[in-house]
Amino acid sequence: MLTEFREFLEKFNVIPAAIGLVLALAVVPVMDAVVNVIFSLIGKAGGLEVNFDEWNPGDIPVGALVTALVTFIFIAFAVFMIVKAIAKAGANTAPAETPDQVLLAEIRDALKAN
Image 1 (cartoon, one colour):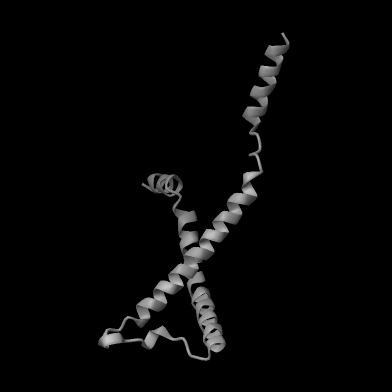
Image 2 (spheres, helix red, strand yellow):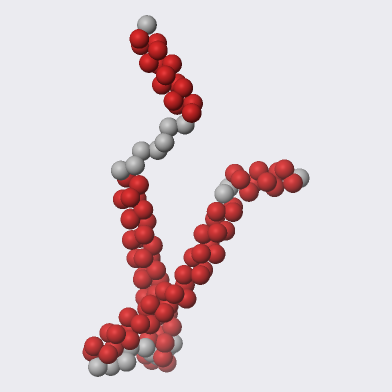
């Protein structure tokens, strides 16, 4: 039973996924603060206070939804930029050869020499 559980954890990469989820949840308050700072700067530049949380047109509380959507867009854009930078950094690198590949290349070269 424990062996099957270990195989499940390894096969579906549960531990790396859990680590990613924990880190993603840790980023949410940071991104909320960034959105609030950006809203504050926009408000100060325009001479008004930008706060969607209390926006209730027609007594429908949509302000919190607007704030959540803007925060989501900022987080999605930040993730996009990070993934793009990682892809660009890894685009010019070739994976290291494994010992098996080195040995097979040596065998191939020896066969070509004969």
